[in-house]
Image 1: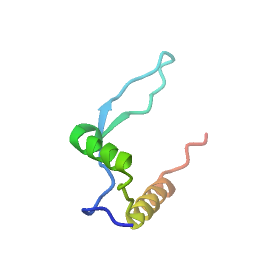
Image 2 (image 1 turned 180 degrees about the horizontal axis):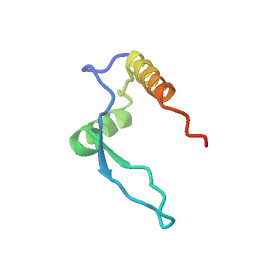
Image 3 (image 1 turned 120 degrees about the vertical axis):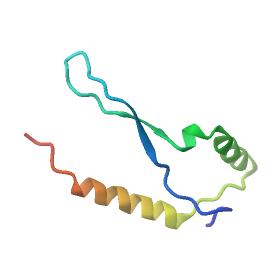
Image 4 (image 1 turned 135 degrees about the vertical axis):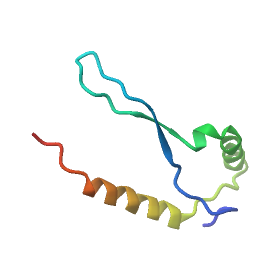
Length: 79
């Protein structure tokens, strides 16, 4: 399935570095490009409502592979 224009995974930007009440580092919150583009969100919602939204399966597969590679490169967090 193809969309009208090529899509790339949303990039992320860190929002905050916070610590919890126990002093442990909390995960950073991320803001995606889609969250900064309300018009894009509205267009996706409209396409879903009309039944015309389609997903580029190659983009989804590439994104999953990229995230998996990144996760495999991270060192284990076991103590």
